[in-house]
Image (cartoon, rainbow, N blue to C red):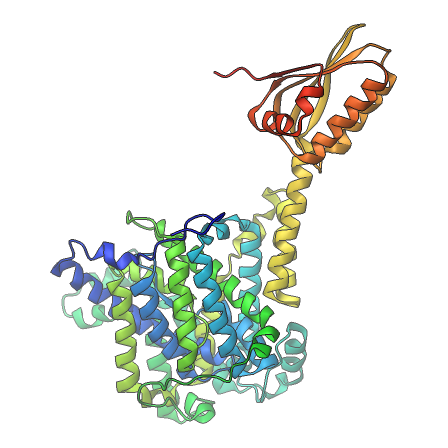
Length: 553
């Protein structure tokens, strides 16, 4: 199907259909194990992301379940896991603070429609044009904001409501530092330390692991090495706080626990007036969702030898998930790198693993939901501090000295604007800077060199691209034409002229007029395909004294 003047629409082909061909019992067992593992990992993260975003914990849980199932079942990747993500925390918190939860749901559903259309019209590949420096800048900026947003619960500060902007958060936290809850800080610090130590403790090359491997009677102890670190921290520290009756804020004390039972389908108050007011939040959610999900899918492609993801199908799946989730009280969802990598390493072979992850999480919530009321908020804050640390690509700051000033400017400006203003402004600024700096760099590559001079003709050789950003470099050539003797022509060797735009063509026509007034001819030789096409279509070729395209090889 196609629309006149537009490319054909992307076909709706979930990767699940292709992966089920030749599916067998062995693959199902591997997917079952991987899905169960990721489901357990997702439990504390989903609650933490929702709470940090200013929502109730069940919003994150049902987003992970519903969106996670739909993204796996309908997406374009074999192993990607979808759900709430740390990158959305700052965005969602700001929207809730400014517009309220009801309008967040409308913005999320509208962003879902936009994401689906981006995939349908084959615009998934456009995300690849976002420069890596911009991606690193806003990713590191979001990581800083996520970490800052968790200091209240990590330190156990008695702050009713945190503001949304960076400087106000710092000011509020600074005013309450004298009221740090030592018990909360201890639990949070133990959580962060445990998350760093646990995987290293059980690494195959660790001394502790090598010593255990020499003992035959600790198989049960070694079995615990398979437990994800966030789950170990959540369970052990929750038991510690409950057993000693530590005076710390918990999910139960702040939210009253997690409701048992399935979420209720509910339509938010909707009007076109509201949708118009939510254009910026909608675009922000859609932009971040598209970038995060496709970056995650690209990371998954680089691990293993499975078929590459379909970016358009992935965006359509993300769109469907984000359109449906808000009607069950959910929050924005996207691809999640940490859970996707966990899924791959656990042995996933198809989207079935992602669907099992969602079902596992649903079973845990429905069966053990009441136990969540004992989870200390400082422990969840510790989990998110660890997530923020892993989210940021901090080594890139140290590597900046190896890159150009253009790269540094784009990355650092995006980083600081993300922190001080918001993601949308940061990405817009990053893209504008990328375009401006690209124009500057390309214009620097253009040059016109005099390579020969006789009484009858001056020969110039053109290099690079003659476009709107480089036309000023033709001024010396115009000046030389003005000073040429009457009848002394100019020949332009365009064999190294890669491209020409209409502004560059207009400059060549000015050169032609200057020479024409003096009775001097202008010729071009060795003209490449793109410049030749523009020159011929404009009729300029007929006005030249000589015009010869490059010889085809």
